[in-house]
Length: 99
Image (cartoon, rainbow, N blue to C red):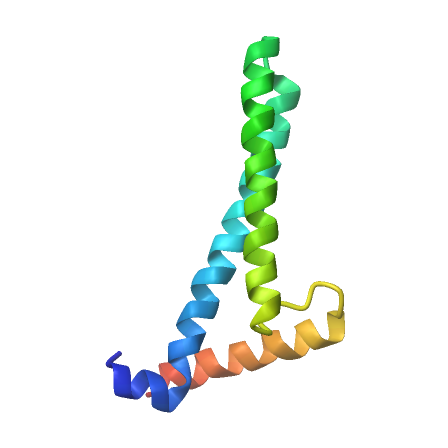
């Protein structure tokens, strides 16, 4: 989509929001995977390395979550607001497919 159409349809900020959301989902998956790996580590050295990686993923999650909250793209403590935002995003995506 060209820049003019992105601005007219609101997809310019939507693209940033989608990228941030995908990144947050990936980080959540990484946190879960590292947590499982820590519990399965075969040696204390491997467990220590995985624990450091887990801590870094948790910090990254906090940064991306804060970024999204600051921009109004994520409402983790206000379920009704998040549902409304999700519904708006769905409608925007549906409208974009008809352009």
